[in-house]
Image 1 (cartoon, rainbow, N blue to C red):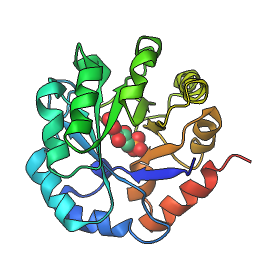
Image 2: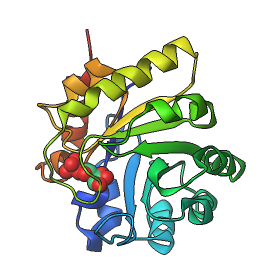
Image 3: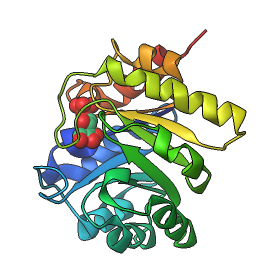
Length: 221
Ligand SMILES: O=C(CO)[C@H](O)[C@H](O)COP(=O)(O)O
């Protein structure tokens, strides 16, 4: 599967989000633009919501990868699909019926993503992965950028990759948190194909070049 790099605008200047999107554009730039939505309840941080997602959508052609770190995703996730997000990912821990939310997202016109925190096992969700287009395995505790990569989470990525192969699933396996030039290869070797990177992209002098370098570093030979 083609490797995707998704810069996280959590590490960009929130007063200049259109510029942040433009900074990672171009033929070797971002495959998706990762937009972290936080509500002060599911995680101890607050970022942005629907009006800002709509404005970002209007400012770029890069497909938006919205990561909802919010409570009650059954109520809110489809509204991000209606706002034009390409991919809407919510947390398994935030709902009793993640498969239903995944189905609703597809009905609303988005790709559906299921996220799990570092301490959440994958096993209870293996049988519902057919309702999703992306599995997001968090490699830090959700809430903040700039944290250290948790390599101990990678066996879940490998387990997911095995299920994709044995179950012939059309599922991207995304990792998010602490992804940089030193950690991306281990995540790719474990089976990830989609890589969110915030500080490694937006703290770089040339964010688009940083995206291309990350993609190159992820290649498993
Ligand atoms: O979901 C997130 C935090 O909850 C961010 O996307 C993630 O942490 C990216 O930042 P960095 O690459 O700096 O770790």
